[in-house]
Length: 356
Image 1 (tube, rainbow, N blue to C red):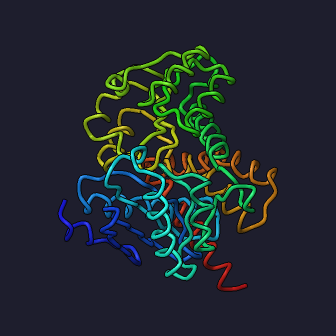
Image 2: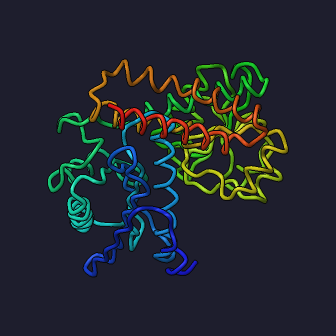
Image 3: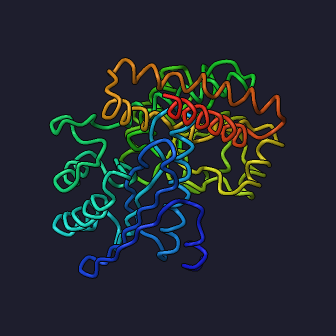
């Protein structure tokens, strides 16, 4: 994809910066501030070209707009992408500190129109570092007055989404079903534990051999990375990077339900249509993985208690039931139904704000 194509985007704002000393490119995209300041995590990763980083940031920011709206949270959608010059694990501490400082400067220049939090390759410690320069940060450590990691709350929400989707698909409960979790990070690992406690048989895959070995020691079965998308299962739970289900994968994926934590799981609209036509029920990711946003916005913006945050994460299952009802009644894919519900809730929130 060319830079020109990547810049042709319907969001509100794109900010870019290049740091010659570190070789890092910085991208911040604000998709919408209709419901409040844009919010979205900071993703640090390598990209083959800047256009790919811009495109990824735009897609992720758009998903955040939908996530906030469908979750009834008073924030808009945005995203940060730091295109790294090398794998994150090979970047030395001083270079990483400079990268974070520059990123924080970029955020601060937006004067509160964008807030960020942890995402791929960033964590609460990194948010603490950002907070040395800018106040517009979610997910700081508890010691720094933040809400800490949102990973477990995200996993709880995905677990509830999985249960709701399995039930709507007519499979009953998770007890006895085979669940394949792709990605055993903080969210995927917790999701695997929750599913196992519910009686599911776990298949697991990850690029990190130690994570896989730990899962196997717990009694789960490892699946080779190359075999993930061809291994039969009842529930496929993608919890790594997005774009996993392409048109080609959708045609052959051997499962009944797709419910995971990864953002932008569906690579294109055609893939969603194919899953729907094949009877594979998909839990739209911006609904299923909203627990992280609920945790951070709820605790740090709205002042919710841990119990309220937990209740709102559990209620993701109820939101999905509404999505499936719209899908069934209107004869559309769950993804389209979820966008419809997000639009309704955004309009209701806007009307309430305007009349308050």
